[in-house]
Image 1: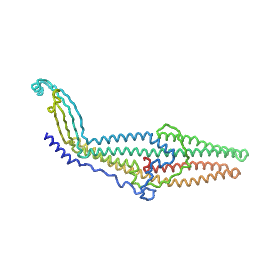
Image 2 (image 1 turned 60 degrees about the vertical axis):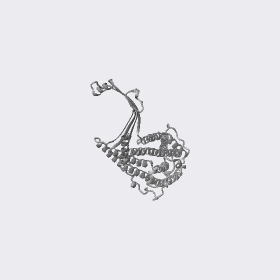
Image 3 (image 1 turned 120 degrees about the vertical axis):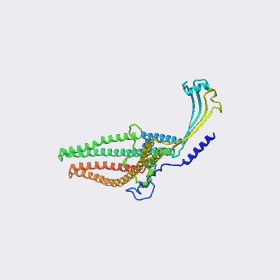
Image 4 (image 1 turned 180 degrees about the horizontal axis):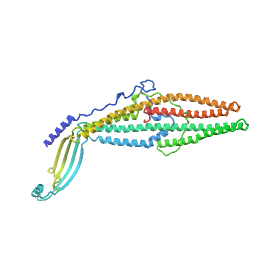
Length: 472
C-alpha cells in the first residue's frame, strides 16, 4: 500500500509541475481593424448610437411592431437558430466535465478452459483437480487525464466561444428579419400609394378623353387625338393590376417572414403621413464589435480558432493518464464477497507520447494555425463590410433627402402645368399632346416620389441594422 501511495505522490508532483504549462499563445483581435470614424459622418467621439434602441422603440407604427413580434416568435429560421444555441450549450456543458475523472462500475464473470497439454492446464489440474477455472470480479474503475498542456482548458474555451457564437448568429439573423419585415411593410405602403396614384391618373385621363371627344364632335381635333388619349388611359390602367399583383406578392413575403401562410396584411396608416427620422447618433466604428452580431461572431471565431491551435499543439506532447481499479475478486462464487480476503486494488499512471502518428498530428496543428490566420482575415473582412454598409447608408440618407426635395418641386410644378394645359386646351390655345405629355410626366413623377419616400424609410432601417440594431 505504501508503494501505491508513493507512486501517486510522484505522479501528483509531476502533474503540479506541468499543470500551468500552455503550449500555444493566442492571437488577439486586431486593434487596427477599425477606422477612427465612418465616411460621410461628422468627426465625433460620441459613442451613443441608434443601435442601442430596442426595435420596439425604434419603430413607432403599431402594424410594424405587430409584424415583427410575430416574426420573432414564429419565424422558422429563428427557431432553428434557437435550437443551434441549445445544442452549443449542451456541448459546452459536456466540455466542462473533461477535467472530471471517468468512473465506471463493473461486474465480470469469466470461465477459462485451457488445453490439457498447456502449462496452465497441467498446473490447474494438479492444483485444483479440475480442468477449468472461474473468475468473478466486481468493483469500480477510474480513469483521469491530467491537463498538463492546457488541452482540456482549450476545449472548454472553444466550446464556450462556439456557444457564444451561436447566440450571435441568432442575433444577426434577427437583425435581418427585423429589417426585412419593416422594409417589406413600407414597401406595401409605397405600393398602396402608387395604386392610388394610378387610379387617380386613370380618372384624370377619363376627364381629358371626354374633353377631346367634345372637341372631336365639334370638328376641332381629329380621331388621332381620341386614340392617343385612350392609349394614355390604357397605359395608366395597366399599372393597376401590376401594382395589385406586387401588393399580393409582398404580403406573401411578409407572411413567410412571420411564419404564417399567405394572407393580407393590415395597414392602418399611409406612406404620406409617415415622417422620415433624422438619425444622427451613429457612434464610432470600434463599437461595432459590441453592437453588431456578425462582427462579434467573427471575433468569437478567432477565439474558437485559438482553442483549436491549443488542442492540436497539446496533442504533440505526452499525455498523462492515471487509472485505478478496486473491488472484490474470487475464483469461487462462494467466496466472492468475503471481506477483506477478496479485496483487490490497482493504481497506474503513465505518459503516452505519439511516435508514428506524430506527422499526422503536426499536420493537424499546421492546419489549425492556418485556420486561425484565416479567422483574422475573416474578422477584418466582417469589419470592412460593416463599416462600408454604415457609410453607404449615411450617404444614401443625405442624397435621398436632396432627391426628394427636387422631386417634390417637380411634382408641384407638373400639377400646376396640368391645370394650365387643360385650361389652355379648352380654350384652343394648346395642343392635346401637351396635355397628355404633362399627365404622363406627372404620373411618373408621383410614382417616383412615392418610391423615394420608401427608399428613405428603408435607408433609415438599413442604417439601424448596419450599426447593429434590431436584436434587442
